[in-house]
Length: 312
Ligand code: AGV
Ligand code: CA
Image 1 (cartoon, rainbow, N blue to C red):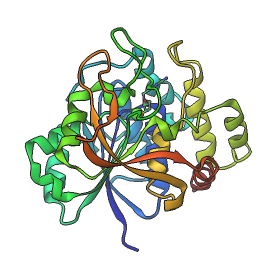
Image 2 (image 1 turned 90 degrees about the vertical axis):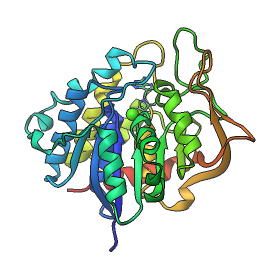
Image 3 (image 1 turned 45 degrees about the horizontal axis):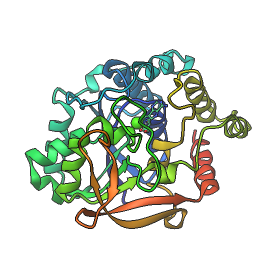
Image 4 (image 1 turned 135 degrees about the horizontal axis):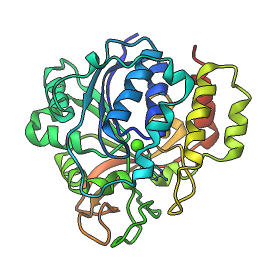
């Protein structure tokens, strides 16, 4: 079976780390590298979590690259501390973090050279801000020819955003808001973008009912571990917003789901880069034509996820 080559760029949130786990269960995916963006995390903790999850799957062949680009609007510090909790879980404590797997290049430079050197187009999955890919394309527009598909958890099109901050009208999703100029640049680059925005992810909140259903499969080690990861989010969400969603996990599921599970629309999109709507992704006749997930078959996503987590 020909595997799909993937570069995964995440930003260390609990669902980013779950996405890494999920990717590693997918037999048709050839995970080449993991880039860590210092957005919704502290870089060292999130890199440590990444190395430990790779160790859990016995994967020494995956390159890990740390990002050094910083967005405009920092994430809340209590959200950024989540990998600290994850790294304190027994399974994670028993895994090794082999720092020799971390390359010397910063993530955007690694991405740029890996894409240029690849003899086939690659899929880039992003579950944090898009700063690394945007910069790689700015430095080497030729990278565009090496992109098969760019799947990005980001944006809020016909629904409200999840940013609650001073000088903001609430219309943006955080991954776009962190570095809206990068999102603008990425859109304008003409990259083959497949957005997984809040419009689609809103159907999958992490509720206690969801966690309870999942617990029926806890004899599978990855189900137990995933449940522990999600439990780490319960107390850490401040009053701005109470619910954690299957945001990044849903974007990652796109790589394995049948085409009919997600309702993809062709939409012309642009990004606002100034307040009070900084990071707002909106329909614009002048914008770039991209694919946008507007809805999903909720149960089909959950079934797929639960099936993959039974991997051992
Ligand atoms: O906007 C969703 C993105 C996803 O990539 N992240 C979390 C996911 O990893 C930012 C975010 C929005 N609300 C949050 C977030 C919350 N309540 N806690 C932590 N992160
Ligand atoms: Ca994320």
